[in-house]
Amino acid sequence: MCTRAHEPLRGAADAALCAQARPLRLSRTLRPRARAPRRGNAAAPDPARPRERAELDLQARRPGRRQDRVLVRRRRRRTAHRVRPRQSLRVRGGGVRVRVRPLPEGGTIGVPAPASPYENRSDVLRGVEWWESKGYRVKLSEAALARDDYVAGAAEQRARDLEAMFSDPEVDVVQALQGGYGSAQTIPHLDFDVIARNPKPFVGYSDITALHTAIRRRVGLPTFYGVGLTGTGDKETTQFTRARLLAVLRGEATGEVPRDPDDPFVRSIRGGRVTAPLVGGCLWLLLQTMGTPWELDLEGSIFFFEDVDAPPWYVDGMLTQLRQAGKLQGVVGVVVGDMEKCDWREERPEWPRTKSIEDVLEEQLEPLHVPVIYKLPLGHGKHLATLPLGVTCTLDADARTLTVDESPFA
Image (cartoon, rainbow, N blue to C red; front, side, top):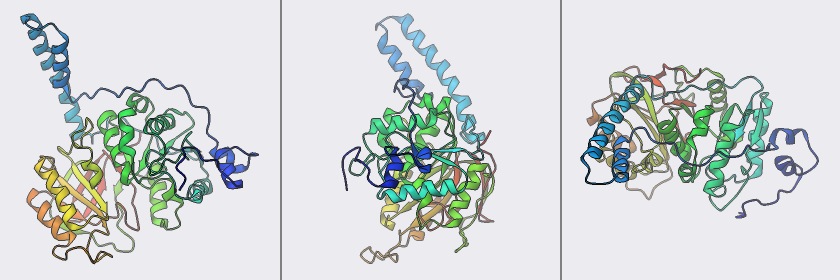
């Protein structure tokens, strides 16, 4: 693997990728346009942390003066009052304060690489070719092809590229190149005001969970748990996955989430019915937000999670951490997607054969006394039903269904 940030590309297809050779039909699609100057890199303030702001105000004033202490107490009360509408909105309105526009016919897909780099250039070309076959254009960010070991370049550059795709007026949907590792590194460098001023559908899964969580917490933007560009073109990706991705981005996001066409069985671990915002992603990436300003907030939400290559004891440990941290106390429902290769039967004979993944889910989730279902095609399995996050959904564990009630689109 090349570890240089901008390795020269070779061959006709590669020249088309970087638009460094005579223009081909593909090059018009992939050639990056000049990026507008960046407007700073300060993260947007988190309105859910009034106490810290009050403490900073207190430090800025001269100590020992009664009038200063009174002013700080008043400011703290006013700020805390302003937080309540946001908390209510999160529960009733699905946690989204803004809406996005669906993908128009002939629109443009902007592709940054906030996590790992591509493995083969053909993976990128296949994804581009698929979008073009559907009548759309693809526009790679300035450093989408960068490679720095297991990440796609420096974190600052990856953050700038993500901002550029949101701010580019030609881009209609922002689709991550792929997951892997490293998207959490970009979050401290992101200017969330840029994203807030330019709301667009943002698609990705797995490692991109970190960005889904941060964008929802800081901007209130609905995002989409679906495959990245390389996954779109992957020869192993099913027609079900591609069709669902396209349908949701075009605006068909509401309604019942489809079941796995090959294995439609969905298990109800605990019955009941609830309507609330849906929040979550890849389980171990959600744990990585703990202790950060964009920490996972599950209060009053339906908790969705999935994972891959995690043995039962490891899943048990992750759920134990969430429970002991108090994160599961306010959960009103749980949707477990694919737990791919998480059982000892699945090519893992070295794992202890004491508990299955279902045993762990039962022991950890039944005591929550909320509706729980398991095995919708959401995650790293063969099929992935693109899912909007942050919007209001209805979980009916008796009927074993999840229905998207609130449209993420304007």
